[in-house]
Image (tube, rainbow, N blue to C red):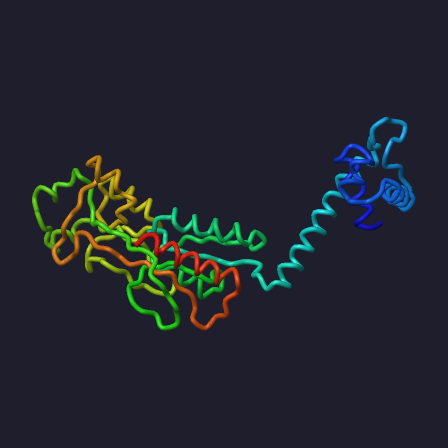
Length: 294
């Protein structure tokens, strides 16, 4: 049994006739006919009911045709993989980004890369805070997007975008009417909702020391806690535009804290790791996307 015989079987079934199969495979009709007869002899089964005007499968032929499609599909995948390995394209490229960032420009860039390199699998991971660094260090991503709070010598990075963060509280909170700037000793009595830090670090940013806290692992939960009047905290501006406009949330100014700030997000990769053609192209596409957003 050969792949050519299975392709002949598939072409006859899907084309509906020996003539169309021959045209599709760029073979003569006698060549296709001989391939099917040889296959039937090898299997000891009749695949086609030759008493019909059109090429109709027998019950055995139906079962074997379904299996033939699977075999041909696997063979095609094998050929694609071999070609991909020959050209040096990566089998998989991982991208990890902080969940605080708008997703749309990231997905547009990834979609373009996937169009150019359809055989490379792109793994997309969303983490909180500096969590993408863990994904990078674990080898599950070759490119990350993180808030650039400090330089990390092991990383090569480029600017991607800035995201505004706003300290907010439920618009029904009495603190908003009692204080223009809430003293720290007062705000410590009110729960601050914070995002848990990365696995390898307990460091958090903008946390009021000594105050009560809610710790959550995603921004949507954090926002909902604040909307429900269960605390206050800093949230990405693009996630709360609707709640601010509707008067559900309101900015709060805490003593010594910035009410609204802009955080730079950068695209980064390990400086010491070799980069394949897909990873390099993705890096270039993110650079181009960043230029469009400036």
